Length: 349
Image 1 (spheres, rainbow, N blue to C red):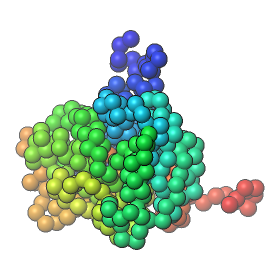
Image 2: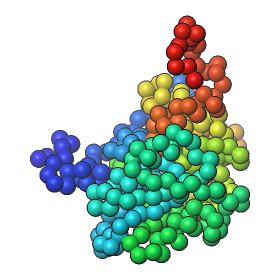
Image 3: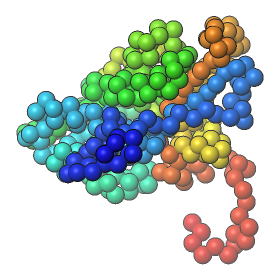
């Protein structure tokens, strides 16, 4: 059957469906001027909708790549259990992918402060959570960290730790799938790429490919500001747990606050681009970068001489639904409509 009909059949239909290389390109959607304060400067900002992957989140790509590489290298033959350090999308995606390779037992170290909704999501996908009190000053070698405990568990026979924080199959997934799509979809005219820094795989993989095609492409990393929360993204302190040498792949780092990330997620979602708070953080980091550059040196150094435009892309890792209760915690109530006849509600929390 022709691939462009988007049909997956046969005994390996689901495995093919979960393989990013077998799927159509994910949408790249330009933001309207209402969401782009630099539209008058001929800046064009595009959202790469990674949340439209089959598993609904960006981690589906590295999850598939990490498991498939182990399979192709013959390293899954004796594996009976997978253990990872993840509180959400990564281990959920790993669990769903691993079942297609015959592995049903998946555990994950999760921080003690994990939200109840995310814990329920792990249970829903069949992941066994192991609650762990993370060190106050995290380090990848700290034996009390979830990262170290998952690696230690993998020393047992039959146990595999994919190791999303130092497994090169993570950034390689974005190098061979995400970045190639972005390059093709922008016809090679991308000038700025901005991604949130979690495992840093998205930033590294896209940077490798895009800078390999055009060294002048600027890569911006958006991280959580100190003492701020955004799911899937780390603060500078928490980035110490990451084993990748990600700094050499990023030209600029932008710290972003919680409320701004959630507000921009709401604005994009209300505008028809339904994305979660980590997408809001990536957009906020991009806008901060452009604002700082405009105030200091001007934007012309980024401008494409032929088109006169500046093309920017940011990935949207997932949707808002897993974090719905958090929006009302981090965003002022004035941003939401009132509820008429609220007193009549029977199941008000």
